[in-house]
Length: 580
Image 1 (cartoon, rainbow, N blue to C red):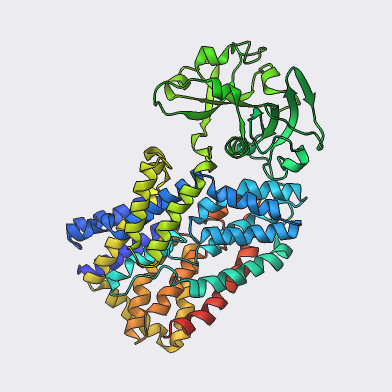
Image 2: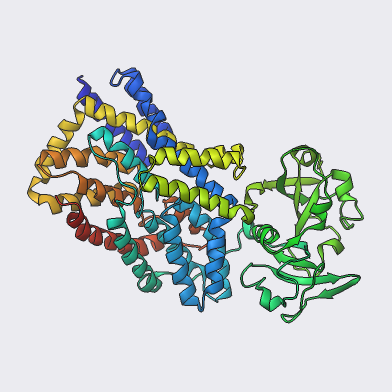
C-alpha cells in the first residue's frame, strides 16, 4: 500500500476518533503520531519538532500569564468596577457582556467565563433577573471576543503556527480584528436584542462553590471603610458581602442597618462566598485577627483549604477559642459555613457537625488535622492579591504590546513575561504547571507533525485535487461558504483546534489548485473554528450549563441564530479585506 493511501486512511480514522471521542483528543493525536513514526511516514526530527515550536511555547506561556492575571484579581477588578457603575439591570447586562468580549480578546475565553460567572450570577440575582437569562450570553460573549486577536483563543494561535509550514505568513497580532470586531459587534447586538426572546427563564441552583461563609474581619487603622456607613461602603452591592453583626469593644451590634457607621478596629461579621471574603481582605483595608496571630514557620508555603467537621470531633459544642484550635493545630480559621443562616460572629459560634471551615496553614500542619476534620478541597489559588494587580497587568500588557508591534516575536515576549512573573512571585511554579492545558499542547504538537507528513507524502495534493474538482463550480464565494460550513459542523463533535488543523491543509490546497489566494479561506476557517455556539460542548458553554439549568436545545435555539450572524458577517467582510 502506497504512503498516500496509508496517510488518507489514518486521516479518516483520526477524524472518526476526534468526532466520537472514544479516546481523549490528546491520546488520539499521540496514537496518530506514533503511527506516522512506526510506518516511516515522517522523520523523527520532524515528528517531534512541534513540541518545541513557537506555537506550543506561546500557548503554554499564555496559559500561565492568564493564571497570573487571575491570581492578581485583575479580571475580577474589571468586573466589579463595571458592576459598581451600572445604572440599571439592562445596562449592567450589556456592559458586562461587552466587557467580557473585550477581556476575552486577550485572555482565555474559558478563564474569562469562569471568573465572571459568580459575579454575573450575583448581579443578576440582585437585579431580579433569572441567571438563565444572562449566563449563556456571558459564554457566547467570551467566545466572540476570542476572534479579535491572535491570542484570543488557542485555535487562532494554532492556525497561525501552522501557516509557515504551508508557505504562508503567520497571522498578524490584530489581523483577525478586521473581521473579528464586526463579528463581535453584530454578535453582541444579537445577544442584546434577539437572544432575550429565545432564552429560558429558570432559577439557578446554588452551586457548592458559591456556599456562603461567615468570617470576622477587623477594620484596620486607615481603612477606607472607617467613617463610612454600610450603605456608603457598598459591601453588599459591590463586594458581595453581608454584614450580620459588628463587635465594637465589648459591645456586639446584631443585624446593623444601612446607616450604621463603621469605625477603626470594629470587627465585622460578614457573610459571603469565600472568593469575596478573600478579595475583601486584600482591597477593603480589613484583616483577620486569627490569621494575623498565626506564626508560619520559615518560608513554608501557605495553603487554604475547606474542611468539614465530622461526628466525634473535639471541636463540637465549643467555640474555636475554647477548643484552642490555633494552638492545637497551628492553623488559622478564616471563615465558617453553616447551612442554617446565623447572625452571630464567627468568634462566638459553637461548632456543629457538618460545619465547613476555611482553614489556612502550611501543608504539614494541614496534614495533622486528624480524623475529626476532613479536607474537602484546596482553595489556595482562589486567593487574590489585588495589590499586585498593577504589576501583573503591566507585565501582561508589556508582552502584548511588544509582541503586537513586532518589537519582539510574540513567543519571545510571552516567555520573557512568564520568566519575570515567576521571578517576581506573581505566580508560583506549581500554579504555572497546573495552569497549562496539556491536552491542548499535545494535540497541537502532534497535529503539526501530521500536517508535515500530509504535505511531504503528497496526500494533501491528492485529497485537495479531488475536493477542488467538486467545488470549482461554486466559485470563490461558494468555496468560502462551503469551507466555513464544514468547519462549523466539525467543531460541534470535535475540539476547535482539531477542526481547524484538519480543515487548514484542505482549504489551502483547494484554493491553490483553483488559482485563489488561500489567505481569505484561512481566515474563514479560523473564524468558523473559533465560534462554536450550537452545542454546549465548548468549554465556556459547559461552565454555564449547570448554573443556568440549561437544556441542550437552549444552545441549539440561541446558538444557531448567532452562528448564522457570524457566517453572514464573515462572508461580507472577508473578501473585502483579503481579496480572492
